[in-house]
Image (cartoon, rainbow, N blue to C red):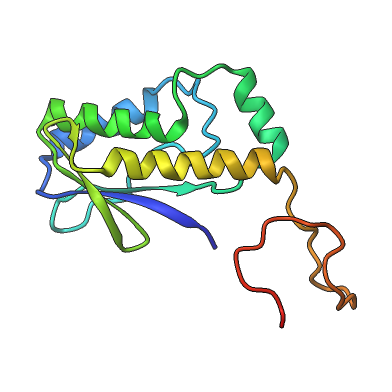
Length: 164
C-alpha cells in the first residue's frame, strides 16, 4: 500500500488535447531519475471526459536510490518536475488541475500557476522524503514469518508511540 498524488482536470478535456498530452508522455525524455514519485501517468478517460492521473509517492527512498538519483544531476527533484509538466499543460491547453493525496485536497494548478500554498506543500513532501532517505537510509528488516517477538535491534524513525 502506498500514498499517491492524484491530479484531475476540473473541466472535461477535448479528445485532441488528451491525445496530445498522452503523446507527450510517451515521448517524454526520461532523464529524470523519479526518486520521490513515479513518473506522471494518466488513467483511462471516464464518461465525464475529465483527465485523471496519479503518481505514487516514495516517502522514504533507499540509500542506493538516492545515490543513483544524485549521480544523474537532475535540474529539479521529481515532484518539481511533475508539477512543471502539469503547469505546462495547464498553460498550453487551459486545463485547471486539482491535486490531492488519497482524497485530501492539496490545491490546484490554474493558468499554468500553482495556486495558494500548493507548491510549498509539495516541496514539504519532497523535503521530508529527502530527510528520511538521508537520516534513515535503511528500513527495518522484514520480520514477517519469524518467531522473533522482541523489539527491533536497530534504532530508527518511529512515527507511532511505542509500548508503555
